Length: 256
Image (cartoon, rainbow, N blue to C red; front, top):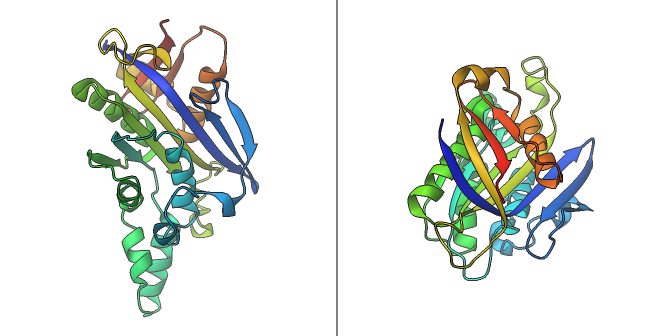
């Protein structure tokens, strides 16, 4: 078992259920999680207009959560993950190929898996590395693992950003599970015991890795993992939460 410590300084969750979108924030300004209604037209206002015009709902929802993680004069590492990526643009391109239409250069460029995080890096002048991950149903766990490892290796803040939207109707018979639009971001800082300056940033957490048997027994969808994780963040209970995938699981607990 691997035991690692970090501090959760802020997190944000955007979710869209049956057209009712909301944004939940927990930052230094909002020490308790606060939820707001979230209109699609108001998303990603922190992205410069020239770049914002290139973003559809996939990118704007991700940007809305990511912007809550950025602090003044910031230069964090970013781990971006998505199970399906910007599948709506991809399906549109495939339709254009099938019908011998001219491909849209904008859709082609923005369909690349790391296109959004590249725009985010330009928008906020981030020069640190960013990582893009797609690992099927294990995408969130893979992204969390990468985030923790990068934070420990660099001893600097790392932001995890996850986004997925409901699949187009053409996939209705392929994926039977309910589809909910979700974008989630969290910022992990090195633990204060290792990096004392600035002291006491955020909530102290412990991440314990679990074996394959427990991982498979607790495996759920990325959306359910995010909901379980944010429920843990907002709970006053000391009971830990375990997030499982097909090969890896993390048990998250408080250690203040």
